[in-house]
Length: 183
Image 1 (cartoon, one colour):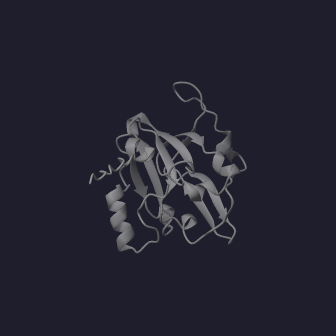
Image 2 (tube, one colour):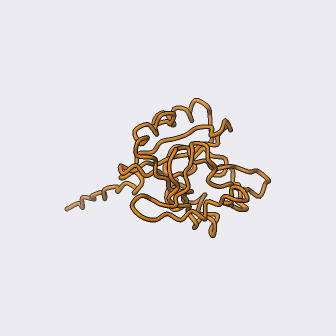
Image 3 (cartoon, rainbow, N blue to C red):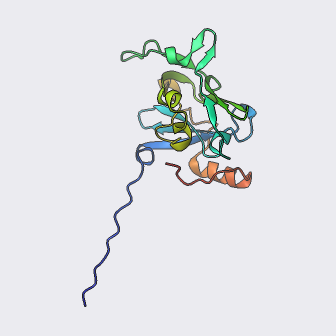
């Protein structure tokens, strides 16, 4: 009797896994568990996302709003970048706020840049569909895209954790959230 050999289809890695190296910033601005993930492409571009242990992604929180109006004179949505030299881009420091996240339980979280460089774009999709930030945080729910200064691009990972270092830190500190892919 002939048996069918089942061939398992190869698992295709996510886009982020194939083309980006993930770096992590733990306890941004000294706030416990407010961790950010910074996938970095080989062309230096960094994407700011929330790490899996961030409180917004835990315990069923409901997002009320995500304003990008940082102050009366500064809105990340007014960032208009053009040309080869990225004219008009807002310069960001490591602690520059990108947006705030207001939850229905009254909690407020600030998402910071974590790298020095120019703001290329803020993800406007998360402003219109708030749930995408929680449903697909490492892909469609990203916060912003930044381009580090060329001269500093080799040093931007100083002070950031690798994926393995972050996993160990999460395990040691008993933070919520597993390190499995959320998307």
